[in-house]
Every structure is written in structure tokens, then in C-alpha cells.
Length: 273
Image (tube, rainbow, N blue to C red; front, side, top):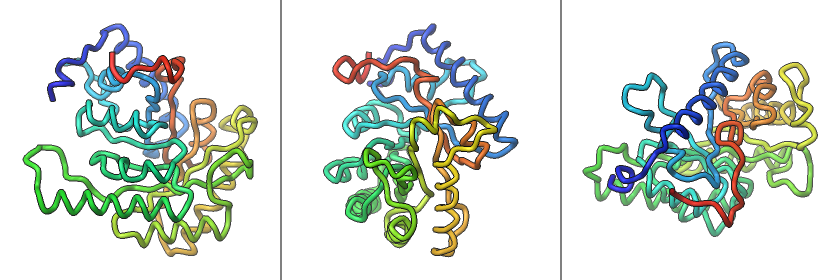
């Protein structure tokens, strides 16, 4: 990929990023007690160079590549996915708008949309992922990259009840959306996600349980029983509270500033340097 070959990686920046993600991974392992917890490195408003530095460690380095990255803005994710290697597994974690579903669903290496909160959005993602899968089947690529697969979905639950937060209401609304995703031809119900109240996040420790995490765990169990499914993930926990989230059973945490540092404003952000 020519764009990747031309992309410059500053060795000192790469070393700093590697050190930070290693520290986060060690903290995850310490509280995870042997469980496989997925780390999604949230690279929003950071250049593609930073992503590449973690996805392709320097030759001879002992570090494992970080391949799961999260983005909050659909256009930024699409631009980075176009620039960067296809083995990167992208996660869309921002507020999902219906108008973004087509472009997102057609990104071959989009691993998961973690903020599905309405039936309409689920139906759009299913429709357009289906178009991508049909096209890839009828015109097989000579690329060594794996073909696109069903799109993983986390249904977002508004566990705090805040009007400012997106997500399904706990209970029947969550169950029915999960049922629709499960039954969709081109989607895979991976689990449930929440972004809880900030005050609760700040107060969360490995010992102090977060009410939002308790609610999401209860909703996961409710959905599993209602739909007769096992193995649904809990996606909960960010930079401020991921250790407490893991202690409460989270299978995926989204960590950004702790790895990448302070973010620029959206106006100042660059897709690549």
C-alpha cells in the first residue's frame, strides 16, 4: 500500500505510544485474571501515523501489534481505513446517525459498530453490509486481505437514564433491538455497550462497583435468557474506569487519551502527518 509506505513514523513518538499501550495492557491483565479482554485503542482526532506505529511495530521489536482501533467520527474512520492496512480492525464507537450507515457498512475491515440504538439503524447497516458481502462474493478480490464478514454489533443501552445519552431503555426496548440484530442476515449480535454517567465513572475503582456496569450486566443476562443465546459481550469501561469495568466482567474496554495523550480540537486534527 503506497500510502502506508510513504507514511512517516517518528521513532520517539512510536516508542512513547508503545510504552503507553504496554502499560494499559499490563493493567488490563492484572485485573482481568486470565480473561481475554479486548483493548480498543481510541484514535479519534489522532493522525493515521499513530495508528500505524502501533499496528506495525518497528522491525525487530518484541511488541505485539495493536489491531483494534476505535473512532467516533464516521468520515474520519473511513479516511483512515482507506489509508491504513486492511488487517486493522476498526470499531465505530461514536453517536451513530442513519446517514452514516451506508458508508460505514461498506468498509470491509469495520469489525464492529458499538452504538446501535434504533431498529432503523440496524436495518440500514444490515442492508448495506449485505450489498458489500454480495459484491465481494460475485467479484472475489486478489488481495491477500480476508474477505469482509458479517458486521458485529453492540447494542447501546442508556444505563444512566440521562437525556443527553444515546441508547435503548433497559428492558423490552433493549431485548427487541437485540432480537432484530440477531435475526438480521448480515449482522452479528456481539453484545451490549454503555457509556455511563461521568460521575459514576470517576468514582469507579476495582473495588467500588459502578451502577451503570451493574445495569448493563443485568441487561446482558436478560437478553441472553430472552433470546436463548450465550456468550454476549459486555463493552464497558474507558480511560477513567476500565479497571473497575473489567472487575465487573467487561469483555472490551475503550481507551484513548491514556494511550494517545491530549487530543487536538476537531478543527486542528490531521488525518495524517
